[in-house]
Image 1: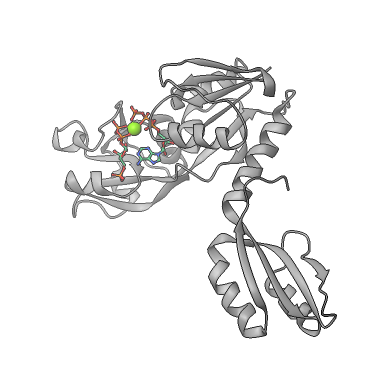
Image 2 (image 1 turned 90 degrees about the vertical axis):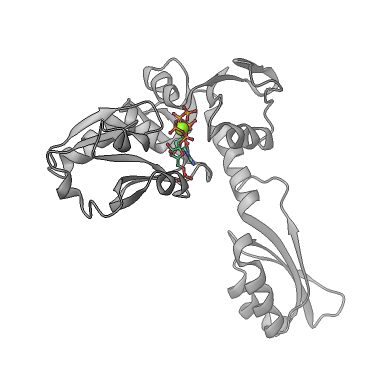
Length: 280
Ligand SMILES: Nc1ncnc2c1ncn2[C@@H]1O[C@H](COP(=O)(O)OP(=O)(O)OP(=O)(O)O)[C@@H](O)[C@H]1O
Ligand SMILES: O=P(O)(O)OC[C@H]1O[C@H](OP(=O)(O)OP(=O)(O)O)[C@H](O)[C@@H]1O
Ligand SMILES: [Mg+2]
């Protein structure tokens, strides 16, 4: 059985389980379940802290796992990203009291609090900054007010937590993160290809819609240029031999712009449907 690590709680947990369920895997009913077998799909799920998932995968104890890119890189283990999963986006950044810092060089000789000390130490070394790193478990924004640090490096999503603590971001982002599937470098255990294809199917089904329309035959090349699809649009004959029906996958975010342009071109009966599942 393929042994898969899934976040048991926190920012990534719900979305990870929802994505696996959408990919046809069993998911737990009770958030206290620690292990779940899915024999029909040849997979066993282990619910673990996202920070620990990189360690289990890196050591080879578990085959693959879902975690944040930031947590994965912080752990500095022998594993690699196999798929980006399109949720759990965040940015890892420097922040300090409003008006105090404007660039990373000013951090020389200062104390920096973070929960991601591995990631931060490497970034400081890469930029030749000599600062003291104070490793905290969480609520890092309070560390400056409480006097254990001069600035912080932390995960920022909306920025509300920083604002509430009287802090602001400065410098370039250290890392852009999102949820990723990680696996051991160079290792492809049985069942991993299927898991990846299924998750890719979910990503595509979420990202794309199916667009159908009728168009005059002489305009089909111009229409196909607007809706090239993944490989090539399907063109089917209609009873009226001057017209054809076209079907193509279109990025969900582009749906209305493309419908407007198709209509302008002369397409009619433009229909959009969601994709329930797919393999690409
Ligand atoms: N608003 C957010 N706050 C925190 N983490 C977020 C947010 N959005 C996305 N993430 C991502 O979620 C992961 C952190 O998950 P989680 O919050 O479960 O870990 P944690 O902070 O170590 O745990 P906890 O806060 O439960 O002690 C990171 O990859 C982070 O980038
Ligand atoms: O920019 P925002 O949308 O405000 O989100 C970022 C905050 O969320 C996370 O904290 P979390 O709730 O995980 O608590 P923690 O700091 O104790 O981990 C993170 O560490 C920041 O504090
Ligand atoms: Mg957290």
